[in-house]
Each structure stands twice: as structure tokens, then as C-alpha cells.
Length: 303
Image (cartoon, rainbow, N blue to C red; front, top):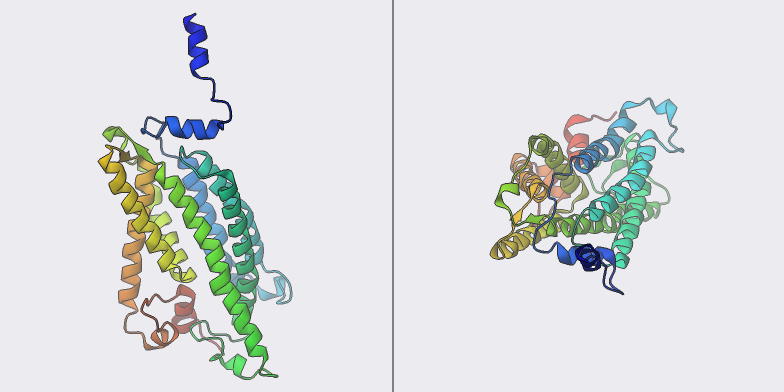
């Protein structure tokens, strides 16, 4: 009789999805809060290799291997990123006790893939222009190679490409990306203070993860999205603290990664504060130069 009663206690409520029931039962923080080393390691590895590494690979490999009218090695890296990252994001959500309705998650992933694909096309063309003398620290219209185009209306087409790449693509790419990270973060709480600590493996991945987020924010020009997510995370922490809940190892890893990223961004801005050329390209209130613009201005020389 007792065994039968126990079985009846675990029968899901009709009409209520099992995942939703699990989320309700774990709201008090009584869940397994072990550090997800496998996911965070794969995230860090593929971010460095497939995102940060793709333009470097394209510049290092001989140009004859990948003609300018064909996809480059960096493009294939980007394609792999567009496939692997959504899968990792879905895996991350699967391990979170709190989530949104499936339709919201699906739309977020679809938007992410579409935005990253738009960026793939724009970024591919922009990096090929570098071999023709295009200078990333200048605007499209101010580039010498654009001023020599005939007819001059072609510059408008390149400005449209730049708009799709830097604004439409980045927004559709990064907003869902940080939204899913934030959703995952809201479930990273425990009612045990002893579980509110990071293992050595998490500390090992902290700096590589932070450096990548620094690159993501500066090169993607998405500081507003990043800082909004960071402040939302702080607000969630304060709200959970009033309920007696603490960040688990995964939540601490995300929080410390974002905090370190913020320090790296501040150091980057201070270092380039008096750069007059970059100041002209980034005249807005938020002055955060792109690393590749710094590269074409101060490191790479054109002939």
C-alpha cells in the first residue's frame, strides 16, 4: 500500500507538461547544482575556434586556396558555428529548471540562426574587401576603394550590406543568445550556501570565457544588450536573495564571466580613449572600438 501511494504521488497532473511540473517542484532550489563542465567547455572551445578564430584562419591561409569568389575557411567555420551553437543553447535550456514556453524558445533559436546567417554573408564579403584595401576603421563611404567605384550608387549597396551585417544581423543574433543565457541564469539558484561556490574547473574556464565575451561585445557592438542582461542578472540575484536562495556554481560562473568582461571592456576603452581616428568612426556616447578596426588601423598595413 505504501509503495502504491508513493507511485501515485509522482504521477504528473493531467494537462501539465512534465517539464513544467519539474520546474515548479524545483523552484525552492532543491536541485542538483553541479557545475556543467561539459557544456561550458564546449561553449568556450567552439566560441574561440569557430567565432573568434574564423577571421584569423581566413587571413592566415593562402589566398589561392580559397578564391575571393568562393567561400573561405572562415565561412565554413561560421557555418559550423551556426549549427553547433543553437544545439548547445538548447542543451543549456534542457538543464535549467526554469524555462519559457517551447514556442518562445523555438522562435529565439530560429531568430538566432537567421541573424547569424545574415552576419555570415555580410562578414564574408567584408573580410574579402580587406584583401582589396578596405579599411575597417573607416566608414563604408569614407573608404578609398569605395570612392573609386563606378557608378557611385554601388556605395549605397555596400552600405546596405553593412547595415544588414552590423545592425540587423547582430540584433537578431545576439538578443536571442543573451536571452537564453539569462533564462538559464534564472534557474541557477540553490537554498544551500555550501553549494554556492565554483570548482577549480570553473575557475580555469573563467578567463577564456570572459575574453570571448569581451570580443563578442566589442566586435559585435552590442554593449547595450550585454549591460542590460548583466543588470537583469543582478536584479534576479537581489530578488532570490530575499527568498533565501544563493547562486550555484553555474550561476556564479556566468556572473563572474560577465563581471570580468565588463572590466576588460573598461580597460579597452581607457586604452583607446585618445585615439582620434577611432573616435571619428565611433562618435556616439558609447565609445567602444571594434578589435578588427584597431587591427586594420594599427597592425595591418596596406599597399
